[in-house]
Image (cartoon, rainbow, N blue to C red; front, side, top):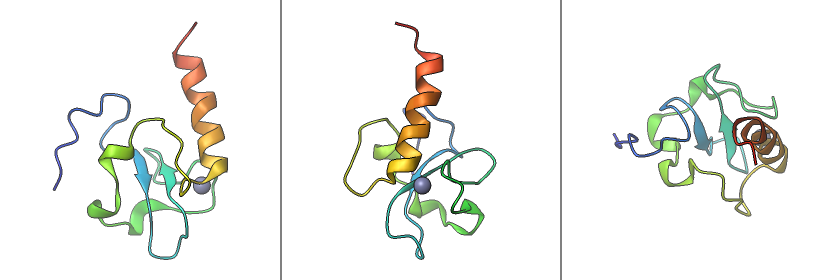
Length: 80
Ligand SMILES: [Zn+2]
């Protein structure tokens, strides 16, 4: 079990995870569904989540649909 207390941007039940049947990392929210709606995380083991990717740095293995939705969510939070 990884200590995720330093990932202030996302709760422990939210983050990027790569499921066995998914080719890319998807961002899963508190409702256990990926932001793109294609996967559900209830079958994902805790170790599937990548705490170090809990931030908002785009990576090649990240689902682009999830990334776009995540960017919209963060835009609402951070007012420039
Ligand atoms: Zn996705």
